[in-house]
Amino acid sequence: MKYRTYPKSDVTVSEVGFGLWTTSTGWWGNNTDDEAVAMLREAHDLGITLFDAADTYGNGRSEEQLATAFSGVRDRVVYATKFGYDFTSDPDARRGQFELPHDFSPAFVRKALEDSLRRLNTDYIDIYQMHNARMAQVADDALWELLASFKAEGKIRMYGVALGPAIGWRYEGIDAVKERNCATLQIIWNILEQYPGNEQIQAAYESDADTGYMIRVPHSSGMLEGHYTKDTVFPENDHRRHRPHSWLLNGVDKVETLRFLERPGRTLGQAAIQWLLAEPRVMSVLPNIYNREQLQEFAKAPDTPALTDDELAQVAALYAKNFGIEEPPMNFKGTMTRDEIHA
Image 1 (cartoon, rainbow, N blue to C red):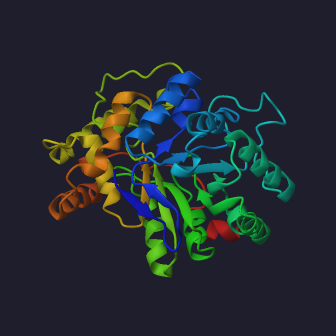
Image 2: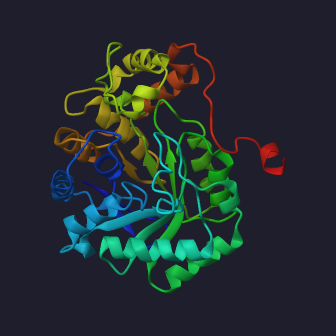
């Protein structure tokens, strides 16, 4: 494992992190808490130090899993968690893939922080993130001031924005960097889905911001692991089951054009992580880990051969022509044009 330190901070994280979405929500298979804790501890044994949770993952379950796994070694791990969803007022509000209501009011955020600290059994959170923030939160001076006060109180070490749930949120990310100089931005970015992540990362260079990036969905919902076929069938409760069948068919064809990235000592899944780590602003990559085999493969990714300049150029050329696939434009979420901001 290798490690990177966020710009102008003392927060150091493993180049591969562990997102607890997979262990606590049931959308990637069902783990018992004991199984989840065992996998978290194994991840730490493999050198992973960054663990990314959210208060809403399993209605507090992800944070409780972290507390159980690392209560005796709190100073050796980095806790990232998120806030902003109200998952307590209406127990029936979560239905399928629909979002819960947001609440970023000062009183709610303060309570959310205290509740997360309690569930995590800690007196500080390393990285505190607005969960799927909208433009209104990026533009909210009072919210940023509140987060700064949490840092001054010693209750958080760093704060920023996690974008989603789906891909998009172009100007939410760009403005969080350029207007807020946010310390951390979590985005969807991978070889197959480079827009708008390319622009969101370029924003830090254009504004000389101090932003470091966490990358989620680095394998394009598992596609870049290289194991899907056109006959793959996802389990009933798996979120990928709800995607159009064309996503699977086109994705498998795209992946075939990337097989040149496989080599002895480096799987395609590891190469997908190395492609991300070629960007210096990327602090940590958060692959979806839902079994021990994936954990071991992905944790080893930073120690596999880095992509060469020629390989990076080949990927760029393939992306420029959409990997030879004709398909309708992707539907993006969030603010994708400046006109939308002033509408």
